[in-house]
Length: 78
Ligand SMILES: [Zn+2]
Image (cartoon, rainbow, N blue to C red; front, top):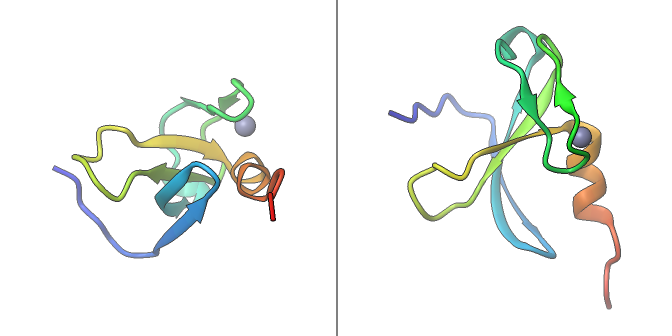
């Protein structure tokens, strides 16, 4: 069951809509692999979790904060 404790934000990027939540270092109790750089996010490192606003939340991904920010800011096409 997906429990939401707040602190979420809705973001729209070049690849569509995401819901994101900042994970504080104290809550990072598992190692994840960041899809932005394919490197691991070590235990205790604050990071971002992002998932699609539709669906069952099974597509949640954990990103380094810097990788997430770079993703949304790259190559804006106006
Ligand atoms: Zn990364």
